[in-house]
Image (spheres, rainbow, N blue to C red):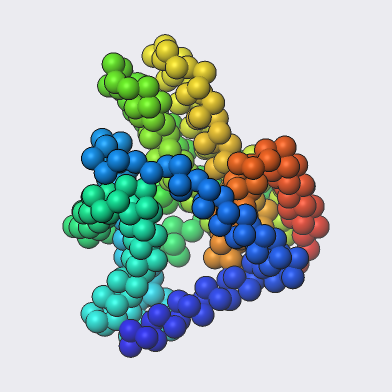
Length: 353
């Protein structure tokens, strides 16, 4: 049973990868990204080593709690979906299968983190990272999982195609965790981002420069994680209903852009001394999320959501590595790629799916 569940997930990953990188040119670019990444990591890891007793090493190792918590929650949601909708539901309901599935899935995330902790700050960092990872999994397992049924929450596709306001309303519903009143929920998210960013600025005053720059970034980042949720089925239908690429891009980017405006307003209101560097960090963070949202939205029509998300993630890693080595080339590649995605989406307008 456990092997059946793992084989099912491996088959889905292989199909998604084959769909995302169907052409030889795409696979060649992926190979080049892997080669560049290996050389870059080899050069960088040697210069980042920290003393095992360093306070900075302690906090870096403790950050393993966050991916552990998020990954375990994602695994629980995935198992719930497999039990309700997949062809391997009997295997997904078996206790042994679930345990093997969770252990193997956590190995893919925890092993690279622990190896990185060992390389950067020896055995002490490894132990701290392991404890933090275990704590993150424990907290995630303790908090009950709330499953939102997409079939009950999904908006009517026809209403999203009538005009800009219904389409924005439908997209906001997904970005606000399936809220019955997405407009009000979006306003609450933006207001909370402003309030918590201002509170983080006030609480971090008097601390080190790194803390004063990092603390105000956390609230808008959490809001962006919520706003990054997109309805692949709905967006994939929009070009066939006549919705243009620009209008879809604006609707997808509206909540992240409002979140940046709220965070920037909090920085100005609190008169943060490091205002310019903090604003640049916030701008870069929101720019990355908005570009990723545009890429996903313009790729969803005619494609499976899983393969699109995988492709966008890998392409972003490649762009980030190119940016670290040669920023102008990365910007040129980004502009070219967005233009290609815009043309691809536009060719599907009013075509029957």
